[in-house]
Each structure stands twice: as structure tokens, then as C-alpha cells.
Image 1: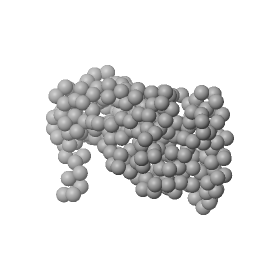
Image 2: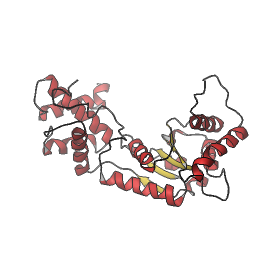
Image 3: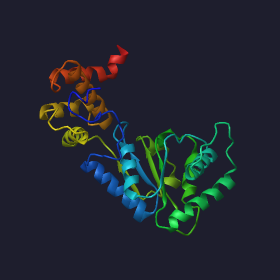
Image 4: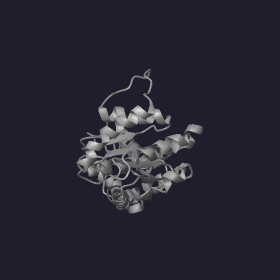
Amino acid sequence: MYQDHFGLNALPFAETSRPDAPVSLPSREAARRRLRYGLEQGRGPVLLFGPPGSGKTVVASTLARELGGRSVLLSYPAMPAPELLAFLADELDGLERASSATAPGLHATLRRLRGQLAGPSRRGRPTLLIVDEAHLIDDPATFEALRLLQNLNPGTAPDLGLMIVGAPELLLRLPPGLADRLTARYALGPLSESESASYVVGRLEAVGADRPLFDPDQLAALHLMADGLPRRLNRLADLALLIAFAEGLPRPDARCLEVASREASPDLLAA
């Protein structure tokens, strides 16, 4: 809507996940390096946790692209263990399970998965399973199924890389049998003020911005309003640009940021 007004070739903050064009940020680079070491050298499951909106899915997706092998994203893992394993097997086969279809027996699914995963592993590119929103899992059997996936071929390195992603309460749900096998864990916190500024500027530059649309004071204000969380930065910066466009301004001013902050506040919905 407003991209032509500001000379942009796309909406800079419309998407919360851009693994194909990430902004390089020190804390996020550190997260990817640590998790990558755990997956490639430790050969065990890794854990990424942090508050909602901190960019966990972006970090996980970007790391998957860096590793270069095949990856499967499980974005709703709160399902019984047989269904979770059947979903993974279907994803690896490129199939879509009909809603009325019954999941096959656990033994048959495990045999199928063993065959699907062995080939890529022998070629040195194990499949990566990203279990997102893992804090929603409330059945211990589901966690046990994830642990058993690391044991499909006993005595060898796991054929399946496992990245568990979720909110901080995940630490209380993770059973000891799986927690003890973690080879890396990373707590993803809010961005620093300098990272927030780099993030906003980087997202604008990625869509062709050839002039600053937020000055340093405004970038600092956005950081405080968003508590350093990328998802909130996206929302606030997007609203500020939209308000400036609606009022015919060449760039957002202080009032645009104030209005954006009020409109993005959850208190507005409660009023």
C-alpha cells in the first residue's frame, strides 16, 4: 500500500519470518553458531527458547537453510505420538494425509522412517526436524517419541537432526530423558538497542530504501516501545509508515510513532 510512496519495492515489515533475507544481528548469529555446533558436532538434539515475538522461528529457519539438507517444520506439535511420527513420514514422502485417515501403527511408521532417513544420513546430510511451539506439548509420550527418533539406528550417529523450539516454559515440560541429551541450548532474548536499529534499517534496505525513514531518536523510541522484540518492531514500524503515508508525510514523525504505539497496544483492545 505505502511502498510506492516511500520508494520501496515491497512491504518491509509485513512478514514476521524472512529466512531468505535475514538481517545479520550479533545475538542471532551467536544462536545459530551454537545450535549448528550442537547439530553437526554434538550429533544430538538442540533447544532454542525465548519469549513470543523474539524471532525463534526465523533463527531456526535460517539455520536450516545454512545447513543445506532437507528440513521439516512441525509448527503444531501438540498431537499424539503416533500421529506426529506419521506426519513426519508423510512430509518426508511429500504426502498430505486426509483428515479422516487413520495413522498407521507405530511399528510400521518407525520402519518407514528408518528407511526414509538412512539415505540422507549416509550422504552426510541428515534430515532436520524443527519442532516449533514445543511448549504446547502436554503429553509425555510425544516427547518420548522425539527422543526415540534419535535411536532409530542404535550405535551410529542420529539419522535425524532435532531442533526443539518454544517459549521459556518449555524448560519445565522437557522430560529429563530428552533434556539430558541436549548438545546445545540457547536462550533467545530481546534485541539490544543497536540491534533493533540495525534490524529496522536492514529490513528497509532489503526492500530498496535509499534514504533514512527513521532517525536515530525514532529508532531508539521504537526499541523501547517494542521491548526489543522483532515481532513488535515489525508491527510498530509498519504502522508508523502507514500513518505517515495516510497523512502525506515524506517520512514518519514523532506523532506517527506515538499513534502507532497506541494502536499497537493491547490496552486499546480492552478499552
